[in-house]
Length: 357
Ligand code: SF4
Ligand code: SF4
Image (cartoon, rainbow, N blue to C red; front, side, top):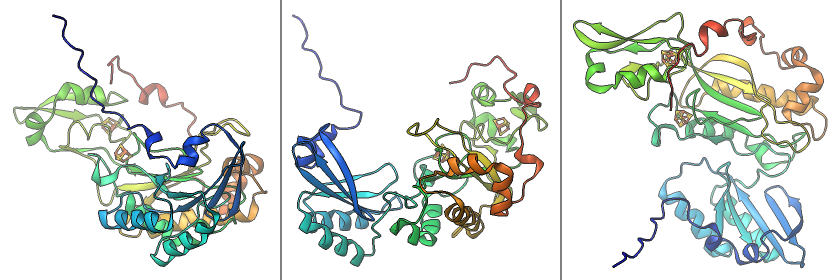
């Protein structure tokens, strides 16, 4: 007898339509235009005249359950029971009745949340997984978001920037960090320190050797035990060997720094997508408030705000004025380390035939 087919196990994202506001579900793909009535509020109008208002409030992404419940209660009481989160960790409430917009904003503000992040504001800093979900972070991620956005709250609430500003933080420099108008990334500055007593118990040595992008790791016998060694002249301090082999400790309170990159843009709406470029490095990774990194970000934002023309994104502005003027205007020091002419690449880039996954 033919066996009945087992139904698939749902392990991906659930279907989003079931959670959508009915007006959004009904008009999916049928929107005529949208407007920005005030900071933090969007109005979408469909081709058949249906309207829906969205109120956006910032969060630092990793939320405790009490805050989440409070946000949901506000949605139930003042909204229409529908929320979603944006990729920049904002919570958004949808209401089909304009009269609910102001009471909803007041309820959020009274509860200590900040409404904004739309149009030409500084949107909420997006961040990677950080300590909670990942095994290799060199810094906290939510903490950087919270401390920087505390200082940029005025720019989140208003429309004062030439165009929108998207910022990202990444707690390592190799994996899930995003592109951004401004990106704050961890930067290791010295090779990993190996705890040889643990390597043979903890690490699968061939995978660690294969993981290194510049073939700087070799198997070695240390004190009669199988271990690894690093060719420090080749090592680019990327940290990729740490996840498969925690005894290759690279995080370091003094030598793990932050670097700031600018001008990244995924969008091809008005120009080609652009890569971000390094503009400040060796910044102390200084919890709990990261004042040095915040000062550099504020300096870049202030200069961009004063100097860019309306609608220029960070990359458009720098393209127009040129990199020398960018460094002059922001007052950031320009050093020889900002230039990579790839002449060293033959020796430092992938020189092995290992296949990596
Ligand atoms: S940026 Fe790196 S350390 Fe941070 S969550 Fe992503 S992979 Fe992990
Ligand atoms: S994986 Fe990165 S940090 Fe580890 S040895 Fe290779 S270059 Fe250095």
